[in-house]
Image (tube, one colour):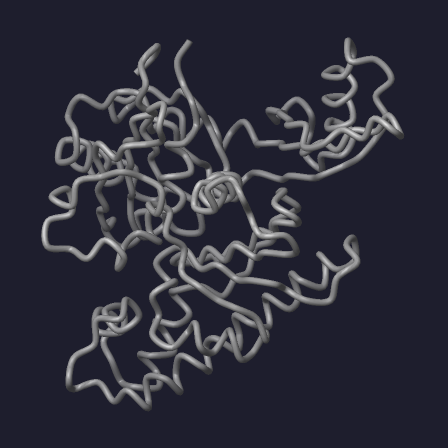
Length: 349
């Protein structure tokens, strides 16, 4: 890949692996390879790798199925061992901007500065006040190194370490074709054990909050309320229901779990409102495996009085439908949101 025009995004989730290989073209992007593989139960729990060998085997198996020539990947650490903060301060001289930004980051991090890796991105400059808005990121070295070692042991080379929230933001920008909606957009990534809500203000990344209610909680509620097995509940969450499922009871159970999720959204939104003069979410976009939970869109629209839709990260990506076989692309595309965002990163010299 180095010096080439393709990038591979590897999304390592608690429940599954997702991979996307994008070729960067003058007229856009072409999907060269993609795949999803569920992980053995208990492989990753709460972001901590519990079954390392099983995870390595799953990665190598997915690579061999999708494209055995893949060697270099962009991967994400998710939200574990990472903190981010957005600050605005004056920079009088561009020559010392980086030194000043990194010093400020070291002062704000709750981690010991010797145990973290710092990075930043300048979001906006305000020439009239000589102020610069900067996004700071700090990653714990120990956690990052464990993932780097894992990638190397899977016979791959990590070329960029990213963050889920930033990958989702980049994917959203592509879906909007560079013309994001003004106002507040909440990107709700519903994973297996954690939900992340990323706020976009007038097309620019604002902040990310974690919500503990995720797909696993919906699974437990369906098991308890409907007497389903874990596997049957998982299929119901994916929208794959059979005639034996009581749809009215399913909707009630989803609404019960979704109320818990909405409480988390309200709490995250209250943090957002403290820094922005707004009282409403203009749009919610769902991604991750939980995006396809039946009747969830309708519940969230009524509960939060806003438009809710499922992300389609492949909306402006060219691809051959043969790549997906008989699978309906729109029924799985939201699962690829993070992987697409990672693959949008440019690598090489």
